[in-house]
Image (cartoon, rainbow, N blue to C red):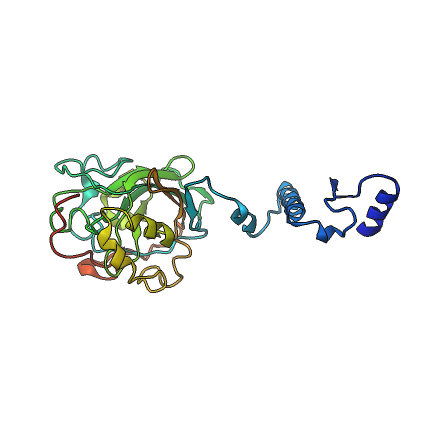
Length: 315
């Protein structure tokens, strides 16, 4: 029995025509002419049914129909599968290329804006919270207990422990231990865009806190790419003036780290605004059954060198 016949019988019996238990918005029209709202309701109903059966559904097009609260931004993607192995760049600070912040007491912390130990400076800039969810693909679940080390440049493009004027500082570097869901969260500032590189955040994943003493024990080394629209908004604010021209000269496709796939699997999902700050999120899939291919790039290599010369006096 076709749905058209069912609809006709329903109409003759005096009942309002319906489809899958829902009244038709346009009783005189075919099911496929009931309008976008009715179509979305139908698709959502089928999606819930499939989930109930454990079949799932491919695609996330419906998510794109949602909206963010007024004054906020939401962009980027959530990576799936194994995160690409990338260079740690020439300024890792993990002992593989000079200084080693991972041996210093106090490196395990959530707020990485200020230096600790003998350092005294605090990095200024638009607030940014970085949230990484680490998944153990070999184990088939959250990578609970993994130690995640993150670092990135300041709003002037300099890296603490390496760049002129901030060699004695160690801000914008820190470690968090993944919780039961494999999540870590860092409070930081939005990094600059320096010459030759797309705006990014570096990170390394270690199996546990004890493994931090040896950079060779990292099970993954990669980078988070920051979405273009958010970068443009941040770089239009005071303190990021030098990033305006450098950002105009780079693209995800031409970047020597993200260029192979345009950063498709490393582009962070971002929400928030300049006033209250941004939250950058990314799911990091780690295959502990394979050897990582990333690592440090001494002497400037593929990691890209930050601007040379003394940084501005204000920070």
